[in-house]
Length: 583
Image 1 (tube, rainbow, N blue to C red):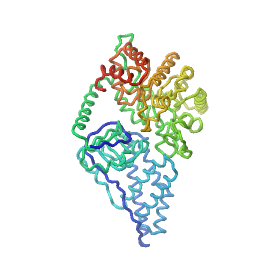
Image 2: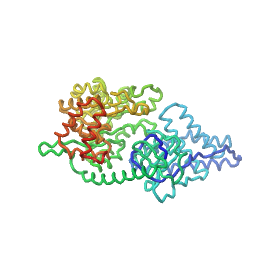
Image 3: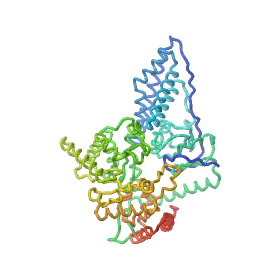
Image 4: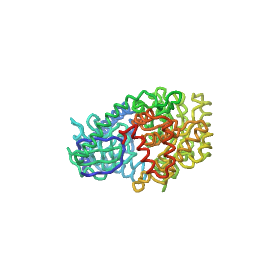
């Protein structure tokens, strides 16, 4: 048995037999042709490009149909390179002047293009380099006639293990048989990871050298939730995971019965306490699954993907199309759109040109938007235009000062005036909210509450900034703890400030979806829980099987503790009585 730890980029667990793909590094020696063969080589290139464009267009359209236009749009980048006249001209010139064979010219120019991307020291382009390799291999397969046979004739369930998977390879995986995948390399923000999440396939990347430890037919456990792959698991581990899978399936069947029931406490009327359970999404295509799990709306629509899916900044129409799509899928349910929460901690073309030493403390989120008003306005115009087509709320991330909030609202007001002048309809009373995710905002919650329509507590960042812990840094990630009394005190104070100002407060960080914290958050008086869609049923079960007296008692007891260990131990005891399967 061997355990590899990597980056879980798509949650879920699979126990299956492995299909190990080789690195697929195509050997392309520099080969020249006779002068009278040049015309034929150019025709081969044209034909290969034409076929590649047709294939990628079909792949893009299929992905758009099944997972939404934003996922399908990933392959617009590929098509853009294939249609890039300067790149094609360089390839053709190599053939005409150096008398290179078609495959040698394609290999040389696209390898050179990839090297230039890497040379920009731009994390965005570093991730996009894989897309260039993807195109190169697609063209070479056409020119050389090489096909990858390993995944073309699957008859049973498998887990794919590869050194790397290109975005188009991931999109083409047969979900009927490929139950998960793991790769030696890769990152959380690559197109491959994004496609995996959209396809709902458990996936772990960045494992180092897992392919060296595996052969076809080996049993493997891919745990996309924990970012772990167990190679050659022993019988006990297999039994444990399979029992867990069976138990989880059984529990899910029971929880599914709650889907259409309200998320309200067991108190007799009129003392019943009703909360809203909503979902966090990155793509509109996730909405149907979230609603199927019982989500009553979208409490957090992360819009960063619009910026990450393409090297071009999204236009107002790109924004509007995505938001309109989301509203249509919601069919009347509310949609809370968070404005751009991007920075050097993720990446952007502009940011990467001026790398920051401490990106989490740098020019990100609302700071970046207020430094680029035209970009900010494009998104706000689209949000407001979408508000004419459904229930839309707008939410500003990482607010830390009143001045930032007021500036953001001022820009929003300017955009409203522009739309009015242009006669474009929108909701003039669109609710305006803010994320509370830095201690400064939490401490000043009473002041902020006077200026917004709702709070949304982003616990992931709030914990990070309160405890000074980068949860993505494996050396200190263990110090990241939602149960820290300082964190809980801030959450309590924000909820209280919202109650006193008579505005709703939600939690949209991971705490909202962890059953361990449901009783506590309920007892503190939380109005809305927003979480990953699959977490909704368990949270609803806890809420429906407790009373507010009990939840408040739990909250008071928790707030009397001075250590996270006490908090976790007590909450586990209390939650186990309602949802024993969660522990």
